[in-house]
Image (cartoon, rainbow, N blue to C red; front, side, top):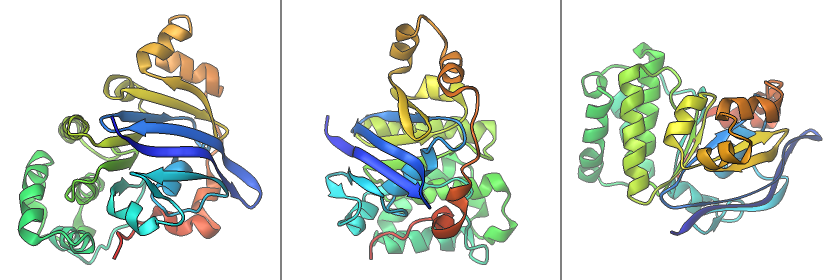
Length: 265
């Protein structure tokens, strides 16, 4: 398997406050890698660095062999990113937004339509592409973001709370799509608070606390290593049951990080 994501001593500070502290991970093609942790553990900050929206304060990272800092355009061509709480262009129709992302990735129209069609069917969104995004529900916006991130078939997917706002049918559709993408060689990083889904979906899991890896392994390995504790029990044991909200990620220099990253031009 090819290593598609590498972090070495990756760190990020906000005004002297550490959010990610010396994170080292290697994620291969075909993996669905779960990123767990309480609020403020560094999950979203890690994904924003991987998406080139934030520069590391120290250490380095590579996506598909390309450096996060010096080869950001090459990284953006190879990722699909769904941030938590993204803001969309609400004056556009759903179809116009997908076409905008298509053009930024320089994907031919016919090819984009071919790739997009099964995703729109899976998320039951085809009939709503002519409506302006401002009229979409939260769940419909999330489906649109997922289609936009998936339509260029990137080798790396970075998903921050991807089930947020989705109904049960759409949740199941997304899980199936992610399994299919992983089987085709994609590396998926899946950050979520829904431990039951992570336990069933992810091949490996990292539990973060205070910006560091507290546990790493497959869900089964982690349970066996910690005397048969369930993943939920282990999570509570390692994290103390919660954490502070990561306010730094929503203020100052990180304010734009909630936007969909611009693909390379």
